[in-house]
Image (cartoon, rainbow, N blue to C red; front, top):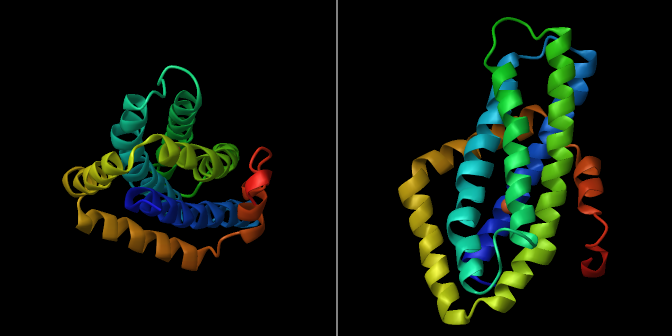
Amino acid sequence: MNKSIDKLMSEHRLIEQVLGSLATFLQKLGTNPDLPRQHLAQFAGFFRNFADRCQHGKEEDRLFVKMNDCGFPREFGPISVMLSEHSAGRYHVRALAEIGAGQGPLTTWEITQAGEHGDEFITLLLGHIQKEDHILYPMAQQAIPAHEFDQLDAACETFEREEIGASEIAKWTALADELNTIYPPDTDRIRAGAACTGCHGHH
Ligand SMILES: [Fe+2]
């Protein structure tokens, strides 16, 4: 497997774990409304920076551009679906971040809002990850010639170094570990998300 695809897929595994932690956090919030608001801000920070700025950034600015060069349109078809899912995800993360940035204990209304946005986001992103792992990335590997893939691998590394930086990536990865420890990931939820129709042939 190509280095850049391999990296994107291992990032998916970490993102899935944090989605599972968020599911646990939201469940606990149902019985314990006193959970720290700050944790919601931390989940939003991880998804905004690691999942979106870093992971989706590499896809949108590098991988999808290369696929576009190889004949995949951006305005319709699989790339446009992936782009619209990224932007739908941003909307939910914005809502979580805004609630997380508030003051004092979470209100009942905020808990309901966090639950709705969080839940939709978890379902959306788990399904999105499956589509990329099982449909989009294999398509990219078929369509992009080997020597161009070497360039893409280098371009993804440059993107990470210049747009994010190793220390920031380390920071968000450490935060993911912390959240996974405080809120052990709901593995059933992760597995249910992985059972997307249309991906069955690949399992
Ligand atoms: Fe994506």
